[in-house]
Image (cartoon, rainbow, N blue to C red; front, top):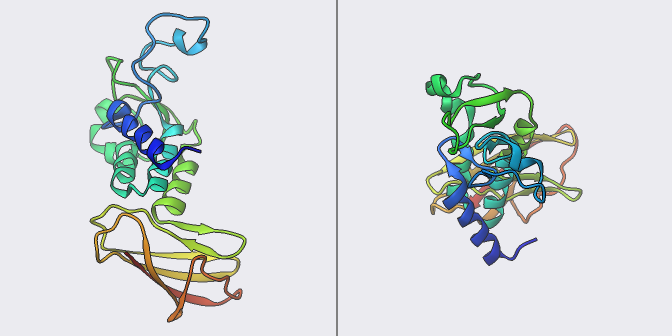
Length: 214
């Protein structure tokens, strides 16, 4: 809904004020006094759940926002921070499975900053699947074809995706020779130049899609 300039200002503020090595806080600073004009959130202890915790469900939306702005480096920074895999070596802090997203992680206004709670009780995994496949890797099914529009870190030189869609198989090879974060220079479908979206191919077919960013 925001203009590009307004969007950049918003996400710069998110990075500056809400980012931590465990993920993005829902808000900050935490409310410290009950305020009935604001409501329930002000009665939650500082750094827990809605009151300035790292609320997992909203983190992938920030990744998607950065991809829409073309900021692949920051999108990956946000993704990596909350990824349970990268918290595997800090289990004494996290206190939860390193293969499950949790509903929230204690925020920096709490003495147990980084402690994860309520594993499995969240829609975070499905939202991150959307953020990664449709926005970072940029493979977006539409009614008219398959849009390929990645937003990746500038140091990614190449990646490959196999996408099965509407009965056809697409072997997508993306090259990034110029260190771009976003932008498509060319697309070849089975050796022939095409534009986004890549045309829908017959069910049962196997197709090669070569993409160059630029």
